[in-house]
Length: 547
Image 1: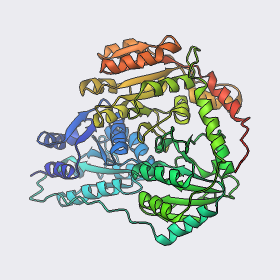
Image 2: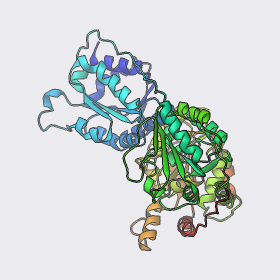
Image 3: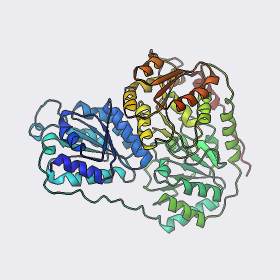
Image 4: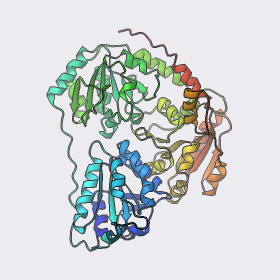
């Protein structure tokens, strides 16, 4: 048995069902070994697309997504997607072929030190230099990638090692540690703080979704009467229709939900990760008491000094707190929720064209079922989706906000559709982000993943224009020309529609769902609303506390 064959058996042993990637000369043996494997190889049109597909696979399943490239430029093309997975806490194992070991010591064609290149953007980066270590390297890569906080691992496999004899070695047993229960002493300390609080609030982060602890959070909020705000990456952790939900936090500027943080005396951070929403944006006075409940200890930060840290299984911690704590008698945050709900409903019947961002988000929600999935790209549209899309379930609105890389939506939607073929999956993207990985439409057509791509069209880098206008009152070099998106879709054998009025958006989305193929919907967007929002947020009047 060759090393490449043993390597593939190790991947099968880890439960890998799909690998995304691009074949190359230096991974020939691995590609050949995959022919006899249960693993499906999805050939992508760019390695970055492969990494993003693996990224979203990891987010949605909790199991490491796998991507593969050849050496040199193939490997460097993986970097953005791998970095995104690592900082967004999605388990991914990236694999790259490498030149033979007899030329790694000198200048040589396409040779780079990939292990050191990937080290800063992964939790584990290793090269297989001996057949005898294959099983250990693969097992460790998956173990580290999937352990809290999850992230990326990288394996470099030189072509001559891949072709060597592996003997009769077998994959190592795949094991997953159980998350320990939190100490009772810490639970009681947290319970005492909550009992004394006049206006506590929960800040729920992506860790709640990773831990599948949303039901425990629902029970905690309902039983103890404590409202919940969620980060961009934790949308749907508590259904927005739940009266305890305060929606999403994460804008760099003050928002309506900031009033709830102003009112709070105790902030219970559950599964919160600092890369999602830095504490200096919601704890500037450093006077509130912070309770940290997570599977990992808190990061050190001057704006995040804990009164109590509860480390362990999140669901167990929340259920234990329910038993140790009485219901909090407060009404202070209800007025804040009422303001948030009222603002979202204002644009339900707006007829302006180009269509306002608020209206696009509203109509998108109306056209989808609760369990359907939106994969948001990065840009001005991301701010509107994060702020206003009413997610009802976890992992139904995927937003990159740790690394926040443009280009994730289209390949990410393909990855999501492969996992959930019976759900509608929509890539919500700006025209700039769409063109960064639009070549993966061919992949979607070939592997028969009928995704919808909703392109917010303004022919510019809208988010950068927004920031430029805030800082300088003028824009600089943000304009570009777009292709005809309808003809572009048709050139791949996909379908395309251009929305021509506000009333057309919902029927167009519904028609795209019926088409059951890859569909691009071109939606002209009125981003004058960006600066209007900036001005409105400067003049928020918070409701007075009534408890």
